[in-house]
Image (cartoon, rainbow, N blue to C red; front, side, top):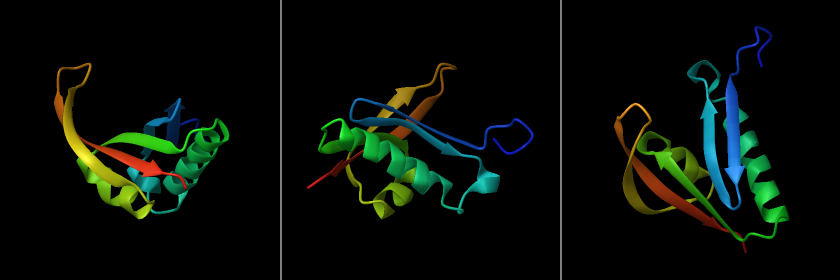
Length: 95
């Protein structure tokens, strides 16, 4: 929250997948997304997983690559509103 009760970022996870990571455009570039991703990764690793999966918008691929993820494929999905969105499947293997 930013003092006005408006969320500026969120990150979700389920099992070994980061299910959502979003930072409001006005707050991007300040390390918030990277911090949230690192926290999600730590929880996934603590649960015993060694492979972390993410499905992300194509515009987010450079960010995830900079965080050590590799693109393993492309897909499309349909939003609740019926919009077809192109996405990338990414993974990070933990040694």
